[in-house]
Length: 276
Image (cartoon, rainbow, N blue to C red; front, side):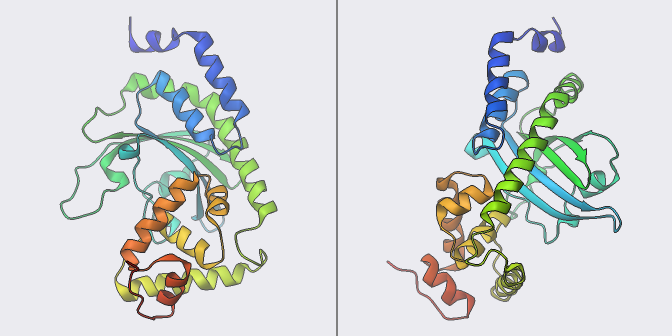
């Protein structure tokens, strides 16, 4: 029996139960975990990441990448892509040129000694939907030491994407609407210029101190500076509270600060010793 047959002969009741649970979780925090469980029943993957891209068709560039959650084995979840601008993302060319739903395969590259772990060290299969100026992505990962996605697996995932992509489009729409209702974690949700200014100042301060934070670490630091709480940031970023706490701890260790007050002092250039 070939791989396709074995996949399609999976116990249907189990598959449709998971699919039903996934439909019920559209727009919810656990959607990524449900999608991960469903996919791993069919094709072995170690991690799943969901994202929504916004493109400017007139200028031919990616203007925003919004992460909508992820799931998988903690040690196998790739770190967030640390690019300075969305258009610098390795997938941006494919995303901008697509005119129909797409499957993108990227084979892993060996790690470079002395450099942080990155997405490039994982085999990737990305299922991409197209709707107006938005692209919804389901990114599936395997670490370098495992086999690349086979042609049979890619063919099956392409077929499965006809079911999954409408769900992630709906998930993206619901979470986007929820964020609009919540505003942001800013005291004044309409003050978008203040957030832009803060982002710029924060990046300049990082560059001055020669410190590199991941995208997630930067997001939680900005959220903290804007008065956001851990639950609010978890809701906005579609992750668990514990994940926000982990990002904050990592950022604090790199910056040498402790808490909101210490972070604020660091922003204005005041030396802040770590609390014992």
